[in-house]
Length: 419
Image 1 (spheres, one colour):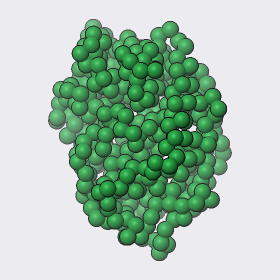
Image 2 (cartoon, one colour; image 1 turned 45 degrees about the vertical axis):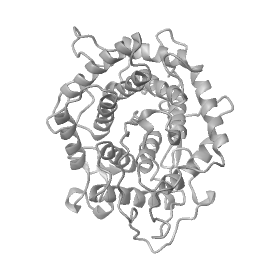
Image 3 (cartoon, rainbow, N blue to C red; image 1 turned 90 degrees about the horizontal axis):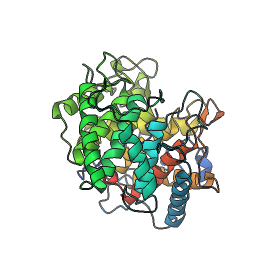
């Protein structure tokens, strides 16, 4: 669940229906005050989303976020980027992950996220205040791309990193695609293009018979939803910058994601099977659903051009129900992977036709996030499990890069942020 963000949602097509949130509760609205929100980092209440038909009415001219508070948000982004730039001390260009849990250190994935964060701030491999950081991170990814003579040509892997695996490959491919679109004709651009071509082929060749992917760079009988999301998003990003992608691979992957979604009660485990309707499972034989994977599933469907219909509607309904449950009973319903969940849910709501829903969910989280930022610019990796505070699972660089990307999303600063 390292892939906190795979932002390959670039189509401008839109299309939710006129009633984006079906309301089953007699309550009119969730109060928007901070007292009704779980203020802990990693928790994500619905943030005062309106629940009346009038408030849910679609508006084409809805703005993504208000002008007020933008200065604090932008200042927090800059502080985060500056702090990240101090965490690239290794000679190979990777970022530091030493404060992560001993068995959770993933330099390839986290360096890819840091590169995306620097690029989201306006820097490229050839210019900008963090040009050197971007360039070194990209060189690190290129140096760790398997050559044609290696066992898995095109696989992006730091051989000392046993955690990132295909999640890391997806994030690295995503970072390379963004770097390529910023400097396609340079000498570095040509090297990135060659790496992207081979990275895409590796993804295509490792797709399993069910249409999904697993943690290995080769096809297996196993498959898992979160890995599949990461690799589908990487394919979309590569395609958007002109790299050839096999359409049949994408079609099979989207079909796999559709089959992960619970659309009939018989697909969900009892009890409370009806509450799982619309949710996405981690595997075809896994009954467990979550907000995180459902948000990722919605973002993947949207990236494939599906913006309306029963699947999108049921997915939004599932997320809404689960957020309300978490708000009412936070202990025991915390986000297991808060950064992953927050970024994919931001993508799913950002691509909703009515941006008020994104605003009402994201703004309280942004305010809390800014409050929790350290004076140095970093964010600590904090999450909660059964009411217990857990610190440092993947480390501060991971948390800071993810939070920067979350805060910067409405600025459309990267091609893969475009609605």
